[in-house]
Length: 261
Ligand SMILES: [Zn+2]
Image (cartoon, rainbow, N blue to C red):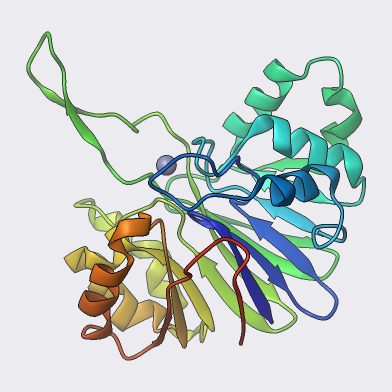
């Protein structure tokens, strides 16, 4: 399998017969995350090489550093075979922004939002997929009027994906981070026997004590790809993480770099 880094948490996964994009169709022009070159953005929008035969486009949630409505609607309309799986909020945004052409791509869109911490199983042309509903990591901000702290991302609906791509098991956790809720560990418990080949994990997930336990006890990935790294943080984080895990580790340097596993 070939893994190509797009930017932030965006990756293209390619096996001999299948291609998947996760959190990739965004504009990638928001420092401090890595830049997506303009010609690459255009290739994604036009669905031309190397993005010409994508089978499945996945989005964990609608934040702008994961999803851009314009890039997404273009990609869908330029490749009528591609399917999209995402939380319903993504569908609502596409509908609102592109009411005139939305109907043309509606059949390609599958929204998913199981009960919290549960999953929905799906299959698209031989790609097996589980979409788990897990919360977006908390981001506490002070309410200027009441002085209370509130989670800025409380209303964001967020999915985590476990894929079987030509026999390779891949986990992408998006912006989720295990929290104080005892149930938050549930989705990972059943991964203990999955033999996950590659786990895409954010630095927040890895550095979180509960996250570290989940990785070692349940996910036990052969290979970890660290994502959502600010360009400046890459050296620092690699030193911290190498000490912690026995899995092979990849930190991509720049957009369109790729590895084979
Ligand atoms: Zn986010």
